[in-house]
Amino acid sequence: MVGVPMIDAGIPEGTGSLEEPTRDLYDYLGLLRRRRTIILAVLACLLAATVAVAFLLPVVYRSTATILIEEQEIPPDLVRSAIASYADQRIETIKQQVLSRATLWHIVEQYDLYKNLRNRNPTEEILERFIQDIQINVMNVKVIDKRTQTPTQATIAFTLAYDGESPELAQKVANELTSLFLQENLKTRERHAQETTAFLKRESENLSRHIHELEEKLAAVKRRADGALPELVALNMQLLNQVQREILDSDRDIRSLRERKTYLEGELAVLKPHTPLISASGERLLDTSERLKSLRAHYASVSAYLEPDHPDLIKVKQELSSLEKEAGATDGREELSKRLTAERASLAALRERMEASHPDIIRAQGVVASLERELAAVMARRPKLSTVKPENPAYINIQSQLASTSATLQSLETARIELKHRLAEYAKRLEATPTVEPEYLDLLRDRENSVRKHQEITSRLMEAQVSGELEVQRKGERFSLINPPELPERPDRPNRKAILFMGAFLALAGGLGTGVVTDKVDRRIHTSGQLARAMGSIPLGVIPYLPTEKEMAQLGRRRATVSLAGLGIMIVGAVVLHLTWMPLDVLWFTILRKLG
Image 1 (cartoon, rainbow, N blue to C red):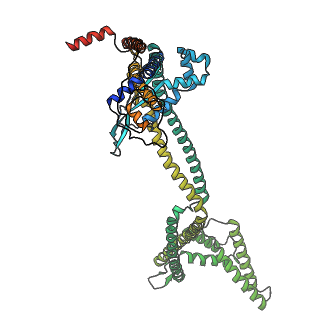
Image 2: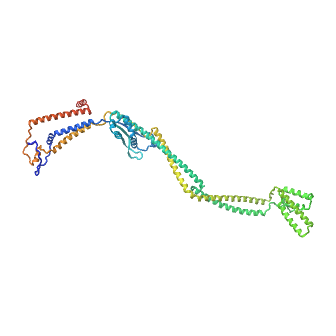
Image 3: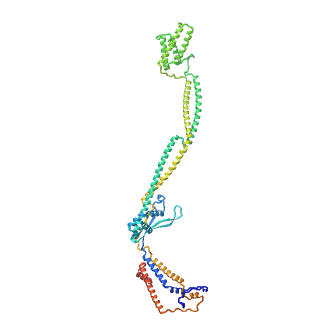
């Protein structure tokens, strides 16, 4: 200390100043001696505040549960799960469902949580405090993605903790929250699988109805098109060309058959159906039909002038009946008509030249009358005709060829008419195809797309049903409780040791800082250096300060006060140590054991 203990003077204006000397340990010790009162006061206040904070903060106990996320037992390549979200996403979703307002308030009322807050705070603040006391932490590990073979983060487990006022309450609430998480996960997975199955089933039914409607429309278009479909264009064109070739071949065959028929008719006209008979003398013998015609003419002639019972007429009748039986039933109307016409012409010629009473005229009149009666009798009888079979082989051959040719020609003409109808039908189909094609192709494309989509939906529906069974039988990915909420033995917070340690450090720093700042703002001179800077020159000598008896007594009382304060701080520290960290007797024996 300088000779003058306190001089409140600064550096005069206009005077020079010495350089600021470097401070050493003695300077700092002097500062501590000068400012020990304020340093100790600030230190004591901060320590008291630290102890108050450490012991007045409410005790919080944390109960934690660990839930493992297990993969599904059946390989995903065999049965794919309907749940496509990642584990952390499902955890966040379940968290939002569990931590709903109704669920949380039910837990608050069930366990009578936050009694003091419920009396003076609204419900929203209580629920916010409840949510803040719930801690969910996800555990991620680095794995290799099997599909992309790249490193990625996978969630394998998560922890669920609750901070409560007492160990038992924290454990109960943590157990309740854990049960809600596990149950909600099961319900969510089953509900998602069921909703997926129901959705795919509805889509499959809608597509089935749509496909049925499209098939009915396609059937209606096919009926209306009557073969004029775009997919049958090539076939219709091929059939059209084939029918045209068949018509050309048929026309060629018809022309050939017509020419052959004309030729055969000409050949048949020059042939007689019966072969002429030649006698031994070389004379031509009449056949049965010729003899029958001649005998009928003779009968008509003789019946004109002979009586019906005349022997000659009876003989002619008998021969005529025998020839008719031999030749078959034939009426001879054509011959009788010709004969009657000739006799009438002969009668007319005789009447021009002779009198009516001339015997030739009378005889001719009788022949005409006889022929008329015979023709009338034949017309009245209308016997069943019988065809006389020809006997000439050449005639028979030509006749059979002509019949075969006529039948073939008729068949070809009928077939040609049918081919014409078919040609018109195929041409009509080809003409109608462009009008049917747009609607038909649209319906066909829509049906193909619907069928393909229905097959995909059906396949997914079967997978969803198997996935639903996987969730019902608990074979899919699930949450397993590996560490249930334990009963906390020690409070999670406050950490009184850390608070006291940090408080002591801050109290010491605050006291020292307060002393330094106080010394800086103090304008009094306490050292020779300060005096030299104030005077602008170095003092010649330093006379130490000699305290009086009164000052010495005050110094003794101050030291006793400081000693008592230090003893009180030590006692308080011992009590804090005993209550927060380790009992003093245990600490003492521990120190003795460490020292041997």
